[in-house]
Amino acid sequence: GRWARDLQGGPDLLTNSRRATKLQQLGFGLGYQREFLVDEIDYVLGRYLPDQITEYYADPKHPHYERRGRGPAPRVSREQRQRIVLEVIEPYIAWKQEHGFLDWSDIDLEMARRDPTPEEKWDVVVVDEAQDFSANQIRGLTRHLADTHSTTFVLDAIQRVYPRGFGW
Image 1 (spheres, one colour):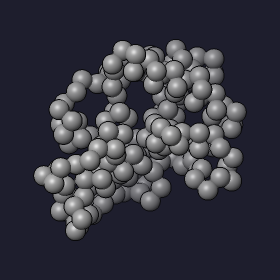
Image 2 (cartoon, helix red, strand yellow):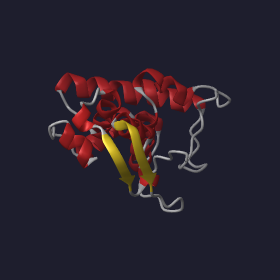
Image 3 (cartoon, rainbow, N blue to C red):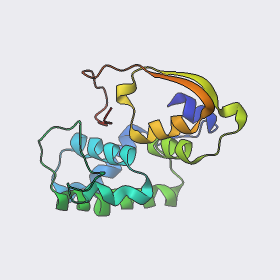
């Protein structure tokens, strides 16, 4: 995260408490506890690119839909997933854009989209604690690999600090 943020000039980010408060306000009618709602939104914003976010509430038989890392409870039905996107995530993204706010998901997306200079491409990369990386963080990292590179992911499949649930 620090590498990505520094590469983007160290922009100010929303504090976790301000972000969580806004998400809780938007998702109040869904009935989830604040921590669960924030974690679920972190999962969605870390897993899907903006133009693929509807895959989160697609039919579970959809080839790209597989939710990992949360466990079976509380249950989030397809309808609830759709409501999370329409009532919380989309308004949250609009709120951030309206006020010029950024969060960590924006940092990850920028890294996945940017066209790195030759100096920003890496020949050798060792990623520690890789079990906590989101899909978009992996996308950002791979975007910055040189054509010929060596990459090592060090992970502990049992340890999980963040409930992002990237499947290895």
